[in-house]
Length: 335
Image (cartoon, rainbow, N blue to C red; front, side):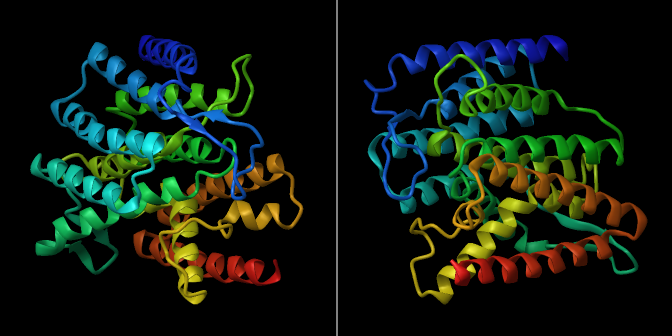
């Protein structure tokens, strides 16, 4: 495992250095506007560097066929995100290619089969709706990470929490196993996060759509992979607790956009980080609060599952979602 970490860190770091020197030439520069926090152009090579780190490291260490296939298929989402970063192609084309990539993964036999054994109800299976639900869930979660990527350290931090939550739930499930791909992702994303947070001598970089969509897509499918009946490292209900904040924020934002009768796909300033910043919280405190909430939610999910059961854990998730939507709506009204 140590060699895997070193390999991913080295390749990702080298990629960051190399791509920073040509970012402007290949039009991977994020320029400031009214919605953005930065005041000067920033290189959007985080996603590209992470992708290179994941691809090369995975080839070196050797992964099971299904995971290699998943990484290869995620290249579709990455490339369309990279194209969007360079030429701003729009969300409809991105969605079409995300659906195509998801269909390719489903062809491998990986999809959401059931919600597991729910207390006295038994196993809740999706049956003929499995494929449709899988595509819907993957597309929603993939774009949830893209939507929330609006503050230094936020998307990267939430991705790291999601990946570490998978390992935590494995530990309290069947035990920690088959985590090479998680190790690669955590190592690559962590290096990006340090640079994004200006915690290294390197100048700040951004994920870009290529990075947020790639990582959102991979996490979506890894949650399905680790909860699939053939593997099932932990109960499917726990999967949603790995990504609580991205789910909560995207649902609440869509609801508020519908209330305001605005396009649900157009960017605005009503995400959780915007609402906190508008209440005069500093950027660092806003980041700390959101990442703390994400970490605590994973622990809440685990505790409610272990001590009460999957149904109670699911109901707790839904209850917190309602509370989150209510509070965020009140924040928006006050702002």
